[in-house]
Length: 416
Ligand code: SF4
Ligand code: SF4
Image 1 (spheres, rainbow, N blue to C red):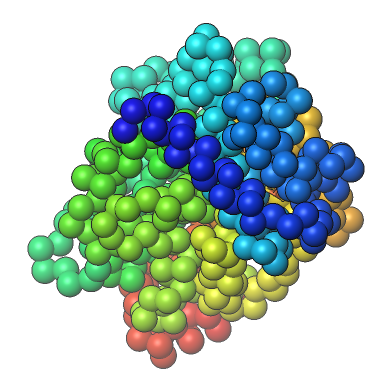
Image 2 (cartoon, protein in one colour):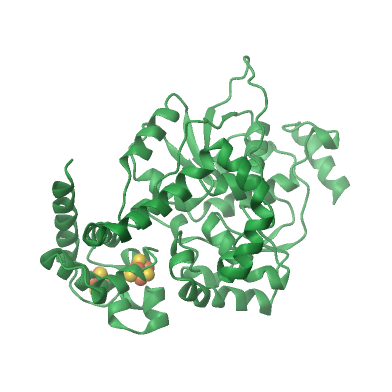
């Protein structure tokens, strides 16, 4: 498709969605940036009006672009809208129009940054170099960009090693989506997912040809069809594609990859053998954060609850202050660090008042943001699969996963 036709398509998309808005204001109290900034331009209704003007006039002046760039893309307005405005489609369209309007140098710099963030983690040589120079890079970040340094983990994590393929295995053949940033910093959650899936008899693969989901590109108005095509090829022939970061999942689900795309907690919590997993009890209080990308229409917010309900004695409570976006929305952390810091203040204050043993969340962006905010309080932030895998009794404990239920009861009594 030519660039001119693409721009015209985006323009029509914006006008179509904006035409549905009746300016009723139901969405306003649901918008985290409106609640924070109390300005009509930073409300969904205001942004819709700005996007409509942008599509009608083609002018990307700063008064139009700044409020659209401050939008989190959290979708809370879309969920609340009684008129069915497809706000996220409108936002992606408006950002694509803004990107097309940008001066070539500015747009080129943004595209270069997206390329570096999304492609470098798949390049073995660059990753080896990054691992080696990570302590120095962190030191430099701490000096030059303290808010960014707070997000950088002390060390980069390795990808999990997979069990040798079993020719006699009959379990589902599932592919694991590693994510671009996650494959560098979230190896612990990926390892936990492999451990749980293997214990349930699944054949797990992490195809080396897989690429970034493209969510960062879409949020910046630079949707990439190349990444989608690469992933379609990489995951062909598997029974399902499983993802850990709900932010990646909402983008993957909007693509046509040719196989079911399922969030890991949802997949595990519906697995017929899940109840047979031998798990140690955990008599602790844990707060569960629900990322915006795990809410409808992309995710099932109940999935982590179902999954963690398997752990005996666990006291699982909602982090109610996560009703609104925490600010960990992809590049938002880098592009709007001050607003992101203000948005995380409510969940941090709640945790400080009544600290749990840990917080669990299913989106890497939220996890990095919450980890940085909660580090001074000493509260760890985990993926739900990490918590479940920590409780799994495996061969190293002298018991086999999927041992008969009678043994399971005995194990739990003994370790309680
Ligand atoms: S709730 Fe929907 S129709 Fe009402 S102002 Fe917001 S976007 Fe427009
Ligand atoms: S997507 Fe979120 S931040 Fe953006 S206008 Fe809607 S509710 Fe507000």
